[in-house]
Image (tube, rainbow, N blue to C red; front, side, top):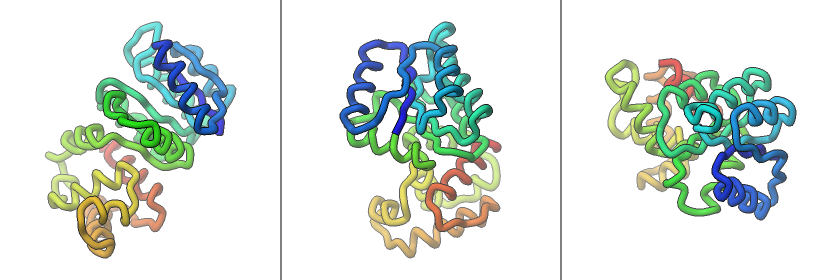
Length: 215
């Protein structure tokens, strides 16, 4: 599995390279600025990109802008964003087209190698890997508007866990309820959001995230 890494801090970039190589990933490119990231993503078309938000030369949104541009040129390009903060505007824009794997993790909340590698693999496979704080802020921004405002507290819990990329079984285990109860909540969520339910976990999560991005 080929990976493009974009991180301007040498030690962190080198650490990501060593970690992913240890788990069998091929590092196709490792860059430290926005222009090089854009070229690498478009020319290499990696299986997944691991991208810091703020890169040289502007240290504002170079990483995400490069990722968004690359997804226009390479539709469905899987992108996993690493950031110190929740950049709501750009997170919503990245999620808006609902195609391809997407992830948004906060650097200081990645607690172990297995957690991070699982997120990379999930995004590469077309799924999602969203930090709960990112999802909470996206949901909070929309909570005043219908139809999200019409969700019950339990349905919001289920939606947040769905958006993290969890299966019904994993949600049931986290909430200590039956899978049948989770399936019922899921059906209610899709009905309230006017979304067509799907048996595919990744597709249903992407649909919800696309809705949030377009709200």
